[in-house]
Image (cartoon, rainbow, N blue to C red; front, side, top):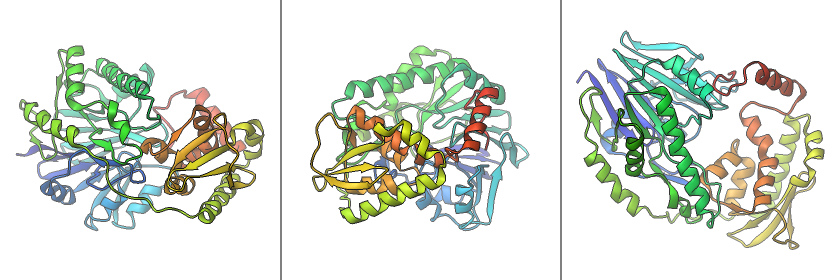
Length: 433
């Protein structure tokens, strides 16, 4: 088979053309987002070997369910890696520790793997990117996690991709920002994701669609409830089929192989997933209990780093003073802490339901303060609960950390540049890198 597609897992697949192989977004095993997610299905051993033997590996963005450092460490040292150009070069520099064959692709650059096989990478929003893969006369558009908001973004993507033979896109929610009792909220999020995917399909008009990048589950005791409203692959395809009678929807199970041209029958793959959805269980992993002295120390370092990186911090702190403090209840030690930018973390006893409150483990709190995308990892992983005011305070306090990780700083020059960019571009689909 000179032309071959192999589905590996979650958002990873391999394309082969005339013995040249390209793998995309390998998350092959283990938990991610501070041990919050696990794969719905174990990756077959044969597929693990096939990824390791690929000629090229492309990563769409830095999130660990697409770019998993633990998997990279297992690959051969001569592996050819492809990644988008970024200001910080975090991923590029990490990959260079393990291979001399790291290729940084400019926006819009068409990279040829052979004369009939190419990939074009385009940045999207703050960290993400999508790719257009051409093999012979086929066009494959991989949107992975790109959160498309409007027709302007769709128009940009359509102009770049042209006629699309196969579209790959996420089909379920990948965020855990809701409390146990908020099932209705999660159901609404799931519904909106399917409706948005349907609008994307209507605009882009692909011949075939592969829903993917959602074959995982919330895997800990403190976030397992979040699985109650996820979009399952069978229900997703049933919903989309009714909306798009002229589009073929495909389901692949890890290890499935297809030649990209002949008919593919979903029934066997869909049936395999049914039992996996039924049999998911929370893991028995136990976090370390972090001492208060360590938490206190890292909170002070967090404050120092925030102020150092954002010279307009004092202005923002003055404007948002009432949102720049929060109470944390540590569920593994049952103690309360108060955080603000003046004193860092302090033990406290005076707390009411009217206060901004966030409940989480001490390990999750540690990761929130020390991680480059600590807030993103917390909200994506969902290992916390917060009241409405607590949720707002979390977002306000950790917005500096989040934006700094995306190479955006609350400095006078950066603010002007972003304002200028919004005025003259007004699109997240074509960000500067």
